[in-house]
Length: 192
Image (cartoon, one colour):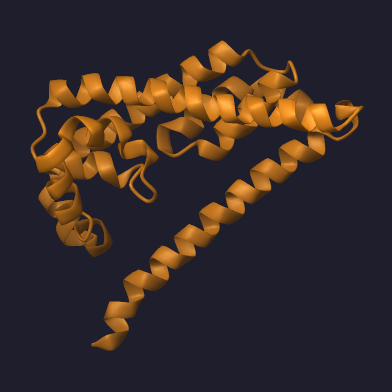
């Protein structure tokens, strides 16, 4: 059942998932590529495109409505000093690696847009960073599939269970982060 779903909608899920965050989807897609359900190169290409477009849109939103977003979302505003300090010291590395920074996958490009980074510089470095990210995360999923396959004689019998575990773990981590973020946002309100 899951393998049929992955074969039918896997590429679409990779593209849509990487528009936003996508690590879990991409790890699962890398695993599926190892199992022969998806083409590894196409997964990485679609992930790169999705991540590039998603971050570019977030960057443009930050350029357009950055001040309003910072006023509306204090949790986002608390990251701005850190981003500005990193921009002063290592702007190229920051733009290349913002998608690897915990908690800044979407907020980072918004903050970079609000910080006045030139759009062309961001677009070029964003595309390179997305290519690195897509290759590394897809490769990690593929390597995970190879490691599991090396340990088990008959991978076919558990491949669907492994995919479910990857997705459930990713979803549980996302829900935990979201709950934690909301709790941190409400803590200053409760002190008033």
